[in-house]
Amino acid sequence: MEKILVKTGIYSLIVTFFLLAVFMKRVEWTTDFEGMTSSVVTPYPEFFFHIFRYSIITTIIAVILVWAYLLSDKKKE
Figure 1: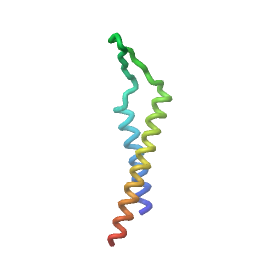
Figure 2 (figure 1 turned 30 degrees about the horizontal axis):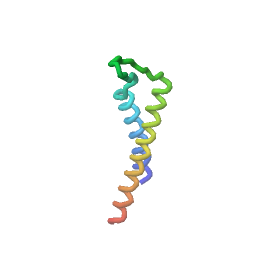
Figure 3 (figure 1 turned 180 degrees about the vertical axis):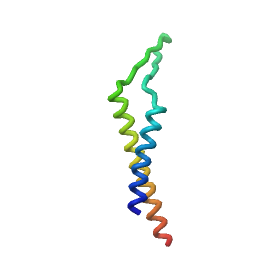
Figure 4 (figure 1 turned 120 degrees about the horizontal axis):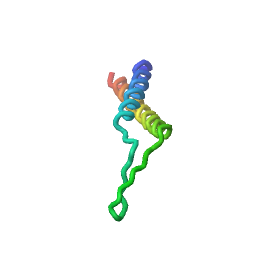
């Protein structure tokens, strides 16, 4: 059971980090009342901290879900 939880934690952290690095936008476009658009660029350190934070949150949720599944599967037996 511990092996499965550790593998789930490691793989979900790595996979979500790389997926967020690819698909999360660093530039946000805003439009004001007059129709003018402007861009806000997130600096790289802040951008990677956001990605790391979301990866950790996703990893914790994945490990809790797998742990609950393994406990419910164990009770059925």
